[in-house]
Length: 372
Image: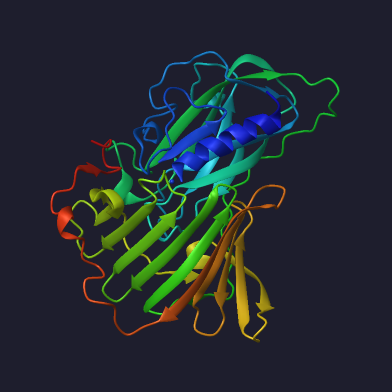
């Protein structure tokens, strides 16, 4: 199939879905399902490929060429005390050892401000020009460093793995390029930063190729409570409304996060990660890049990270969130979220209380063990 046809097929798959990490293109070993956050096919915790045996190559890559790959962070495990990263590595054998891996690309993790967040990444990797192989392995790792995601016990960096079997062939017509030395994750240098108000309510809207999602966010940093409502192009018409409620002060086995689907009165609980402030600057893996001015004269601070290609916008006066944009390697917009956050002193009664039908959740999912 042509590259465009392949990417359109991927877009359709991702549209059904709505970071765990899944390798989408090339297709990972074994099952691939993006139908829900925390899917077991994105939960592979042992090197190098989660215990899955080699198979036939699912895609041919070209030595010396820049190749597009697609992966999904199936749940977000941002850990501000030691931010994590994703990396791609290549082994020119289907049964690699530690010494066989060549790192191709490293991408910073990002603050999703909620664990139950599925994020699709389209990135470019440079295949080294010097070698070919009829049976090779492309590996992705999500090195989260999050102590609440350690599983099994010896996986102390809380790493998630996935692999795809590929072939590497020569490209005679291509002017071969030497692969650059692998770069360490980018850590934002000191610069302007700000922390959002301690309590606020936001209305928002995300636009992407796969549709529109609207948001209502209730954020209480004082009590460490968050409610996040999402409506629109999520899974399908039955599951097109989702409510997330997290009480970060309940620390038994990680804070419980309620994932609620009101249309079908269905409730799930996830073992969430720890609370961190909604803030902008080096402490959250982003660097200030410029200021802009809105039509009404208000100043906007723009923050960005050059590896994960996210750009954040926040009002300079009061540090109220305005949105986030995700770009692809060609700097086209993948998705854009606009927010209008207003500080508040209080919230409507019951904002952070799950509905009565959630007294008995139908399942429990956690990164400390596979989903039940």
